[in-house]
Length: 226
Image (cartoon, rainbow, N blue to C red; front, side, top):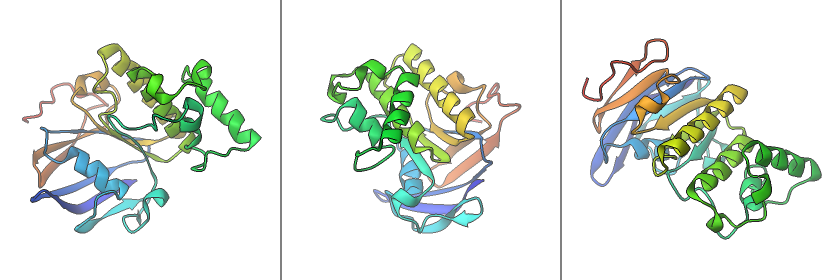
């Protein structure tokens, strides 16, 4: 289980506070207006932004004292997920080894992941030469190989058209199913993932968030103003 207990962070003279619980393998959507603290939540969970107070637990163990690389989180942002001067192969390799020097078995795993995400013919291309959809598939392949138990997704597909957003969400569902991943997804397109959502974390204000369970994984009847 992933739990945030009165987690407090401050940014630009705003105070943010979150509390939620998410069972292993569940997906929680995070919704709210711009500037309300959705991305700050992701940064705080990751350890990129300092915590003022409160605790993050994974399987009943506090994790907010851990270095970023030791936390149980894989992450996809809306942009800047890749090193554009590196090839597709090198970018995906970072999911297995931060020095990108892979053993033969690791290289085999990488090529399998690349084929799975439709990237087998693109491994020698630089990330800067890819389309937006291809770049996000590279980032997904890297996250897949990291095999972290929790995925934090900060609107990773929002700049893509609907068909590519749907494709991205389907890839996330595949990763979630195969790895039993717990997923937090910041989104403005709740209707596109409603069959997968177990709960919704909704902002009433930066310091007042409400977690609402969905009925049988459906967001039918949910309104951001409820």
